[in-house]
Length: 462
Image (cartoon, rainbow, N blue to C red; front, side, top):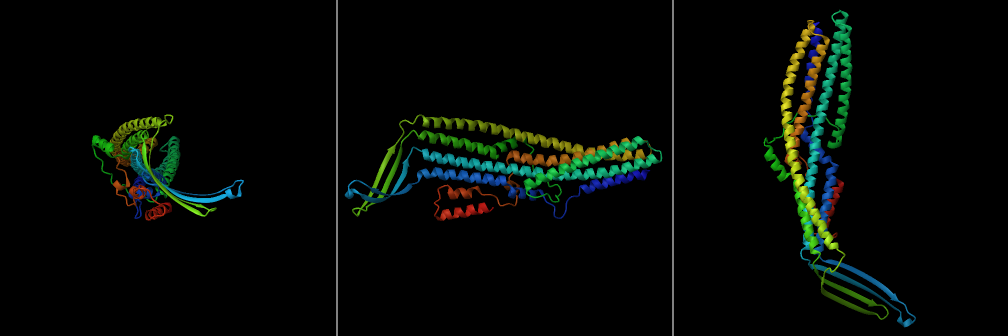
C-alpha cells in the first residue's frame, strides 16, 4: 500500500516543479510586454492629439500680436429714371490691422495657453504611467493565473490517484465507504476549482490582449524587482516634486493666473495701427481711382453690461479652484505613496511566511501519507494535508504577483513609471516637435507649413 501513496506524491511534486518551468527560448519578457503596450495604446494616441490641440491654442493666442490682413472686392450697378445716371463700378481693397499695445492682455493670453500646454504634457505622462501599470498588472496576472491552472491540474491528477488508492483499500477492507466518498467529493471540488481557474485565465488573457495588443505568449521567468527606496518620506517628497499630476496642477494654477491678467487688461484701451489700399473703376466714365490710408486708433470699453467684470471674477474663481486642487493632489500623492509602501511591506512579509508555510506543508503532507499507509491516519487526514499544501502553493503564487505589482505601484506613485525611466526600447513621442512648428503661427503655403503637413501625415499614418 505504501506504493499507492508514494506514486501520487511523486506525481504532485513533479507537476508542481514542471508548472514553474514556463520559460522558453522565445519567452516574452515584461519589457517586451511594456513596449507592446506603449506602441499599441489608443489612449496615448488620443491624449497626444489633445496635446496638439492645446498647442494650437498657443498659435491662436499668438495671432493677436501679428498683423491681420484682409481683402475685399465689390461690383455694383446703380439704376435710376435717367438713363445717363445709370452707372457701373467695381472696387478692390486690401485692409491691414496691427495691435500695438493692449496693456499686456494678449501676452497674458499667450502665457495662459502655454501653461495649459505644459499641463497637458504632464497629463499625457500621467496617462502613460497608468498604461504602464495596467500592462504590468496584466502581465503578472496572466503569469499567476497560468500557474493556478497548472497547479489545479496537478492537484486533480493527484486526487484521481487518491481516489483509486481509496477504492483499492476499500476493496481489501482497509477503509470504509465513507473514505471513498470523501475522496470523490474532494475530486469533484478540484474539478470545480480547475474550471474557475481556467475562467480566470481566460479573463486575464483577454485583459492582456486589450492592453498589450496581442494574446500572451510563453512568459519569461520572474524579472528582477525594480529598485525601491526604503524611505517613505523621501519617496513622498519625490512624488510632490516630480509626479506628472502635481506638475499638471501647478501649470493649471499658473494658466488661470495669466487668465486673470488677460481679463483685467480688457478694461483698458487698445492701440492699433490700420492701413488700407484700394482700387476703384467706374465703367461708365472709364475713370480709375487709387487710394491708400494709414491711421492710428485707440479704443476702449465704456459700458458692456458687466461682461468684463464677470470675466475677471470667473477667472479668479477658477484660480481659487486650481489652488484647492493643487492642495488635494499633493495630499493624494502623499497618501498613494504611503499606501503603496505599506502594501509592498506587507506583501514582502507575507511572502516569507508563505515560503515557510510551503516547506512545513510539504513535510506534513509526506508525513501524513506515510502514517496513512501504516493505518495511523485516515483518508480525510491525507486529503486535508494535500489541500493545505495546495493552498500554500496558491498563496505563494498570489503573493509573488502582488509583490511585483506593489513595487511598480510605488514607481507609479512617485512618478517614475514612464517609458523613459524604464529604459524601454520605443520611439518616444516628442511633445516639443509639434509645438515648435505651430507656436508662432504657420502659414499654409510656406516652408514651415509644408513641414507641418508632413508631420500630420505621419501621425495619421501611425
